[in-house]
Amino acid sequence: MRLVSTQSVSEGDILGKTIHNDQGQVLLHEGVALTSRIIKRLHDLGISFIYIKDERTADIEIEDVLQKKTKQKGNENN
Image 1 (cartoon, rainbow, N blue to C red):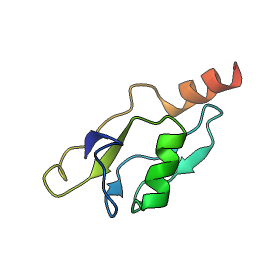
Image 2: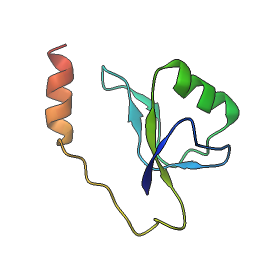
Image 3: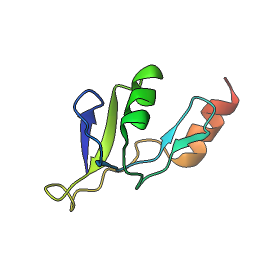
């Protein structure tokens, strides 16, 4: 898995990490194949970088810096 700019992703790339909005709701699940419509929506939402899965980096796993509970608690305070 690797971090890439949404400007450089292509149709068919596989999302490597689930994308959440500010309220913690899932926007896109890990494993989704990107389409031109999804890529445009990411741009519209101001999402600049995403993780994608590919063969070159298949053995690399990215750990979340914050635990899920901490993220949820932070979102509750907004």
